[in-house]
Structures are given as structure tokens and as C-alpha cells.
Length: 416
Figure (cartoon, rainbow, N blue to C red):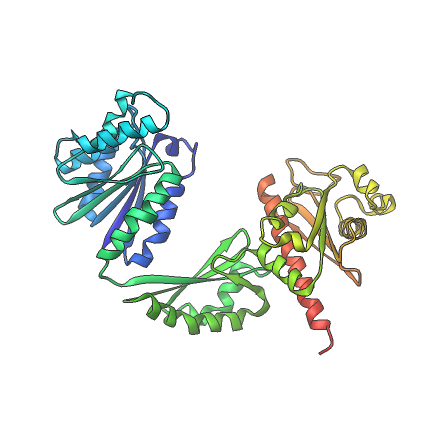
């Protein structure tokens, strides 16, 4: 089965919202053996929308639409699909009764008559239940092809997909399925990873893709087979070889997050952590506490944006005066100060220039990260001249990398 996705809403074209619905649906199609060949975004214009759906209908077996099922005048998805089908809409009495009852349950005495369009169907269409909202979906079949329309609000769309749409598509799937595993690395660049694994890149089933992500370089291994279990058996030896080649650069896979891996390593070693941040503004502490179990090992974090506040919490003024606030020496002093102040086993300090202007002669994007584990100190510096948000996120990734590297070094130094 070949599919196309059509995302509907002028707000998408204006950049007011991200099209997360298309991403969500696309990620679930390979396991159903459905090939996705195109994704389109279109505003709330009935004629243009009908043309987009008609074109997709001519190429694909399955057209998946999201958005435009509300009650307002610019919610035109139903009209456009009816146009493509060449059918007239009508009000389904059962849907109308359900809509009116739903409004009554929510304390509204009467349903606005404008909402009656949400009870529309066509002869080739049936409603898809939507208990999370007022807009039922549409499942239209004609000439051996399917058009599915789901609501735009992500909470409604994902529930409808998970509970109503995906199970029905899965029951009809007769072709090969596509499964994948992701291997995640940090500390080596995309080009170097590509070069290291180049002998394996010639494989076609499974195939390997190399991608740069915010938390490092990811390698996705994808296999096509008649059954998921068979696909995973194809992936297993390739993944094993990838991990052998990339060694300690591999920090996780699939749904793993770097912060959860670091928290897990700290818990396994019964070590505690504290942070002092400047340019990252507490983002490292925030992301660490996203990981389950962080309360067992994370002592706390200090945001010392002002130089004077750094000194108040134990960073020697002499170090700042001699080396500058953005330096390896200050980052290490911050790590030492927070380790002592919060009585943790490991302290991490982050200082740098997030922008939009230089600081003390240091360029935008220069970040220094220091670590003190009570036995030794270490640091790293990077320069990533991007927007503030990107600099802060890169600072966090590198800080997590430094913590992980330090923990691995402790293990290697421990007598057997």
C-alpha cells in the first residue's frame, strides 16, 4: 500500500504551529508495511485542498489527512473530500444526536448550529469516533482506495490514530513490514562516523542511514521483511557489528535519552551530581530532572548568571580576574564550588557566550564545561556559533557527554 499525507491548516503555512501530526503518522507507517512517498501542507482553501487530495488520490492507495474538521467556515476538509469523491454530503442523524448529547453533557444547553457540519457524511464515508473532541474523523473508501481524515489537535489525532485508524490498517496489511533500530553516538562527528562504518553502508537489507541530531550522531538500521520478527533478526548482527566498530562512542539506542543514560550510570555507581550553570541558564539541571530516578542522584543546580553570584557561591575572584569568566579554569572552579556547596560526589560547571553579542572578547557560541569528581578535574571547550537556544542545547549535550566520559574513565581506572 502506497500512502500520502496531507496536513491542512493555514496556521501551518504561516509557521504558527509545527506539523507534528504528519511526523507522528509517518513514524507509524513502516511497521504497517505502508510506503509513504509524499507529504503535503495546504491552507484552508477548499479548491486548493481538493486539488491536493485529488492529486494524492491519483497516485496513492491511501491518503491520510489531518486538520480542517472543526465547525467553522474555514474548516473545509469534508467539503474537499466530498468534491474529490464526487458525492454530496448529508447530515447523519445518529452523529447529530451524539453531537447534541455531547454538548449537553458538557453543560451547554444547545449545540451551535454551525457544529452540524461535524455530523456530515457521504455515501462512501463512515465516521471515526473521537471521544476527545467534537469532530469525528472520516473514513472514505471508493474504487479500492481510502481517504482518512483526522482532527488537527494532536491529542485528538494521536488517540484516533492509535485506537481507531492504525488497528484497522494493520488488519488489512498484507505486504512486507519495515522495522528499524537506532544506534546513538556522541563525541565523534558525522563524517567520521560515516567513514568508520562505510563497509556496512553498502548493505541494502538492512540498510543504514547516518544522521546528525542534537544529542549526537544516530545510525538507523532499517530492514524490510514479511514479519517484524524476521526484520529484527536481520538487524541484530548489523547492530552488533556497528557497536563493535563505534565502541564507547555508543551511548544508547532507540528511545534512550542521554540524560537518562547518565542518571542510570550515576545510580549504578551510587554517585551524586550537582551543577553550576551560567550561559545554559539551568537547562542542564532541567534536562537531568526529566530523567526518571534523577532525585536519587541529582543534588541540585545553581544558576549563577552574574559574575558576583559565582563568587558568592565559592568561585575565586582571582581565577575570574586572571582567566576571565569564560574559560576552562572558571568552568572547573564552578564545578569544584558546586560540588563542595551541595556536598555531591561530582560537580559540573558550564560557562560561555550564548549571544547575541560577544563577551569579554570571547565569540558567540564558545562554551567551557568543567568537571570535578573530588579526585581530579577535567574540562572541554567547544564553539558553536548559532542561536542562543542551539548554543544552550549543545552545551547541555556536551556536559552530559563529559559526565558520561568521566564515569567511564573511573571504571577503567578501578583495579580489577
